[in-house]
Length: 291
Ligand SMILES: [Zn+2]
Image (cartoon, rainbow, N blue to C red; front, side, top):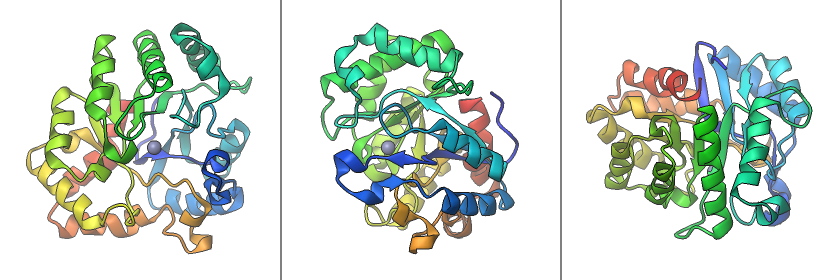
């Protein structure tokens, strides 16, 4: 699928439900009217595409997504795959690598839940903090097989930014095109050398927890971005907010989706980052990675 011209939010969940395992109703983002309201505003600010990385077991809902797409005019890409332990559906425990790959392959080639809407992205597929459980490794192997077959981009989840190098090691076994891989949440690592090592392998990285200052102050994100951009790496970075909770939205006094454009981009400009580099991160790179 071709992306529309304009800004792309690289890692979001239009609707998501992790409230079961997290035992927190806030993690059920089912506020469609509030979401539509915010995304209409986002469209006016130049956002044309959103990569929705909600997949099997995360409360993905294609009808909901289609309504939001229609009401807002934003192009929303859907995903296939499996998130991470303990959010896996039973099939991840029961089926083998090839069987899981087949399910994902069918969602890409035939569509999701008989909707006719095809998955455009494999993600977000994740690893736990400091270790990879066997089921997570199985999903990384299945995803690699499906990528090689279809060429679809892979978006990973890293827990607090960790284990990106280990994720890449699995992809390399299968000959995955690392320029079609995005390692997510690396801003939470706070570790410039580590992020440089990831990019050096050939992958892209996502600074996609923008606004989550309880994990990381924005000054750390801005400084990391400045260091990366000074090394000429703005073509390997994408940005997003990873909104997953009701309380992230404006109606509950959260920052809302527009914070990235209204506030964070100003911090980048004040930090001396050029418009061309900002355009790479918000607009240009997405066409190469996701299209
Ligand atoms: Zn994630």
